[in-house]
Image 1: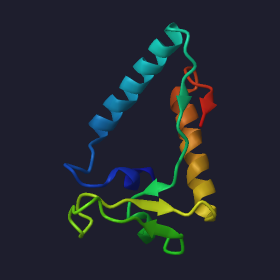
Image 2: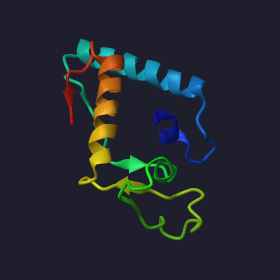
Image 3: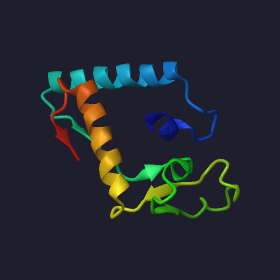
Length: 113
């Protein structure tokens, strides 16, 4: 399911190399924050998802938000989809998100938002 979360346009889909570089950068930033005496707080899953999630989970309660100003109405560049907070899938994805985040960043961050 993680792969579908990075498929949107603007030059995408994102490559695995780019994703790996972003993870390495995040770890460097978290390390530096700790060196400076800061407590990193990482985000949790907010419900944003690509349209493809509807194909994987057709019964999910997903809302397509409006277009950005007058940007392409075909959702080629600007569509945002939100999974309803009361949908059971939000817990499943949220838990998977946190498990993966803890696996990757456990020695740097202990707080999630």
